[in-house]
Length: 335
Length: 303
Image (cartoon, rainbow over all chains, first blue to last red; front, side, top):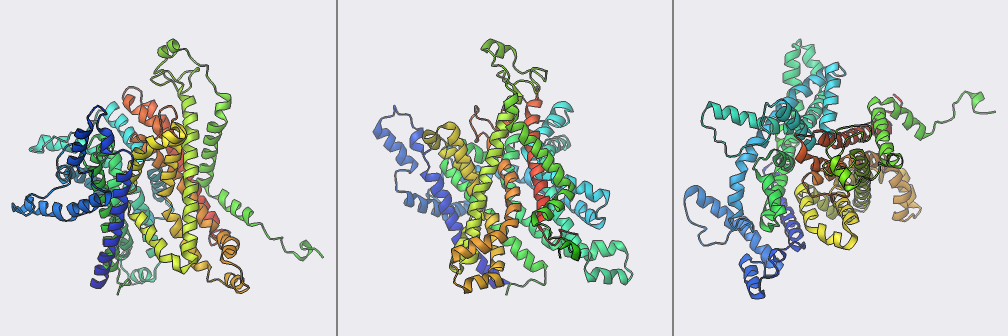
């Protein structure tokens, strides 16, 4: 297991390097360069100075290596400094956003709590809805509940989140007036009233994302349960005279959860991608909306860094899913 | 002596068997009917529905109207007929889905067949596939559209340029599933006796692939293709929804929804119609894919 983990970790390094190369060059070689943002009335020597201060007058590979060094060396050191109050990274050049002229990682650190509260809750809610639906659908296969579950899942797959989101806004915010249309990021939870307010403004984004995730996961849960229900050990358990609750919730459920857990782990990076839409729609000031703003503002360092962080998340959770599978299922051994 | 006199029914054609299984799938039939209706509306509709061109003054007076006989779905903030725009947008949306899927399937199948058939290519091509799977697709698509839109629009014109760019970008970021499925199938197929027999008489790889391998990977590819259309339509509408899709005078359903967002509170119908159209299309395409999967699986068929 340990050798497998190490091998996979080592294999992830060239993959990530290749991805960083693709992201950096795709973004960098594109025509929307910072030079085109400077008005033509600016004299050439001033223009050269501006470009120099942005660091874009060097060859592309120098900038790539510098960015890599900043990403993997300078920024972690800065993180350590910020946590422990040391000053290892003093005087080192950080990744600077073109738009705000402040360190990219500072902006990301500001934004990530919003994303995690909303998206994290949504995923949790999605999983908590999906598991019981999947279990009961499988236990009563072809029942009315199962068929309703199938319809629900099919609709959840097919209706895009931006449409469920707008529908929710029209129904619950405009007509019924239950929830606010926009998410207020400045709200601080200090007492009961502000907590209720926070719950109300989180309700719609969480429901939208949660339902979308629940649709897929409930299907996995159902088919995994069905795979196990017909197994011999289930018949043995029933033959021993165990009651249905123990058979289903202990024997079958535990074994069925193994593939579902990996699916849940695999879905985590993709929800960050989906969060871009929800954050944009509800005005949640998280990293998804930061990415959109950066793209619209031609903020290359921000876009490169955020896209690469998404890529790292995908690779990381793929690895975690593989490891989880090996740990939970004794039939799978990687050695 | 004929077959009938011996009591043996003539062998059923495979397509007939598949079709018979397909029409048993209620969801798939529902999907087929809905999709066919939508396609008819979008393709044939404009031939019958051409509202008179309004003068500027008339258009100004008739903006933001509700549904009426003259404008069955109402008008938008510039006094344009929503039904007409919905039909025009639907054509583009469906075209994007079909063309992007075709690019993805052709590329994915090629990669899959090459990786599965030629051992030397397997490693590099599958690493490439893995790398593409690890790319953050939505952010990259947004970046690609944002950065290359103006340049490509300069070469091909704004409409064809946007279409080419978006279709190509979606196609090149969604071929990985097809490649993986096809590779798996080819790996199993190439050990079969008929492929071995074909190779033993000196058939060239190209011919073995075209003659024996490709026809046999067709069914999983068809299912993947159907689901790919739905995926491509959603991806396109996401791009349009974030304001990085098609230009306003060449709309898709996603673009119409994006435009309607500003008027969502006063005129919710402007958001609901395009959203419903996207959802119905994707739902019916998904249902058809489900039905196809069952119909093309010989283990389920005939039971």
